[in-house]
Image 1 (cartoon, one colour):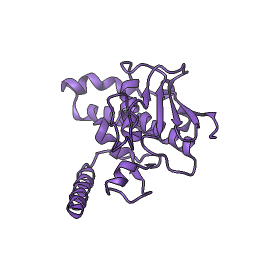
Image 2 (cartoon, rainbow, N blue to C red):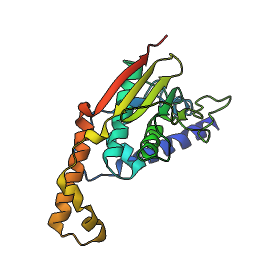
Image 3 (tube, rainbow, N blue to C red):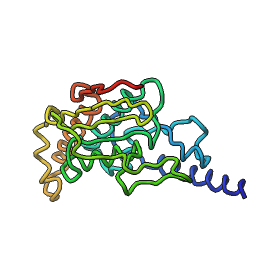
Image 4 (cartoon, rainbow, N blue to C red):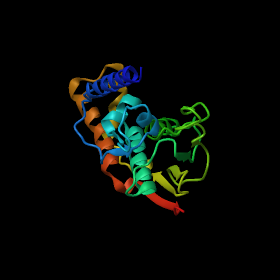
Length: 227
């Protein structure tokens, strides 16, 4: 029975990897480095070897958001910078990171960004995954809103084991807005010709590229040192 369960899990993982790799987004830019995070539940179920991290790049995050935009790119950078600052040379663990947003869930872009960060970290509200057995991997009550004031779009990451806390602020208002973004209405209603559509799309993705590689749009602060 154990062997059969393991083979089913292996088949599921193979299918999941195939589905992820079959999505070829039509973007011509790279992210700013992969996010690595461990998932004890996946390890316990045999989906990953003990200690092996899940590797998330920007393209794989887009399977959650469904499109590439400054909010999605910002969520990726916030997650990457926050987890790196929080964990240093170690690999963060899903279910062991609390995430607090400065704004409310129903305020754009906090809802969008927090959803993507939840996808990466597993941090969720009381509707999240309750864990296995006695709660191993519990991700409930790890995502909080309106926790502090921020000069920008702010998120805090706290390690439940070490007590370390870092704050990442995304200065979206400072990201340049190319003039051709104003062509969006014609793109949406179908009145724009092919040349106009191309100009709009290039302007849109130029802005995303700026976010993915623009360290100046993010501030990272350490709020407390680990015990």
